[in-house]
Length: 91
Image (cartoon, rainbow, N blue to C red; front, side):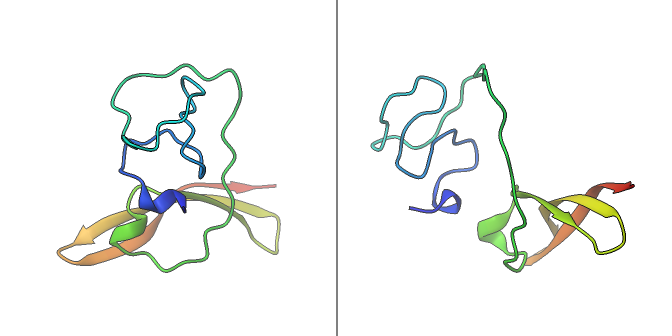
């Protein structure tokens, strides 16, 4: 399963393992509580078009001239979605 198949507040791996309790939780893929992580979450460049399946997704990408970007897929109008830039870093 791909991450986008889970509900919006899901904290599961692609194998259905709950990241908070480290237990398999394939029967209930949504997580509505708070979790403490002793590690980090790494995101990469999502090259898919912005659409309702990607709403809430975050991507990291790098430009060719010393820039890096963090974007989030957001609904911007009825039935219209876009990758919105959250942060741009120039180095």
